[in-house]
Length: 237
Image (cartoon, rainbow, N blue to C red; front, top):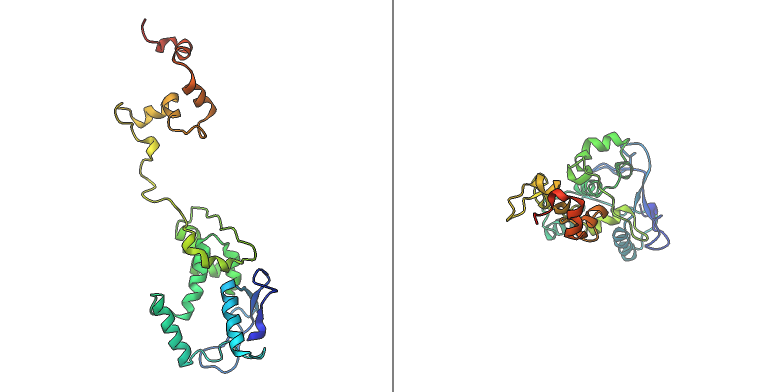
């Protein structure tokens, strides 16, 4: 109902949310309790706040009216079909939006405890049963994902508007292949182990900003100074 919307003072007010305190089965005419039997508050993204605001202005409803009076309304179903086709997602159901919300936020690194409360689950274990495979980088559960930093006035749901701009990892290719700095250097017949064993050679793999202090000193030391420090390696006179 419209009275369950906490609009916030403006779009930067993070207190904006929706109150979910009842549910209604398809075809029913009366509200029932939620599955968990508890009321919950769901963060209201800026895009949803704007869409609901536009709808409110066009209808000017009372606070007790339902936002969507009848989900079986042919006009609503026709609009939904048009929207999904335009998005190249035919066959998507309304329930799929809930799964998309949860899976994307978990993949972004949002804590499952927060997502679980937004979904209205009785406990985190219920959320893990359905969505654990999305924690981390969509299955790479050993990788820690740092959640994106929220901008001023944003709630986690606002992150869904930035998905195309925030790829999870810029790294591509096989993570088990030998990295470039371990590859043998052409023209010297050198193995990776020999390259790592040589302080001077190893120092060549660093930029000036990255070079360890010891390696920088060794690389910058004049040849005669290195010869005095290691007579055995000095060339014959």
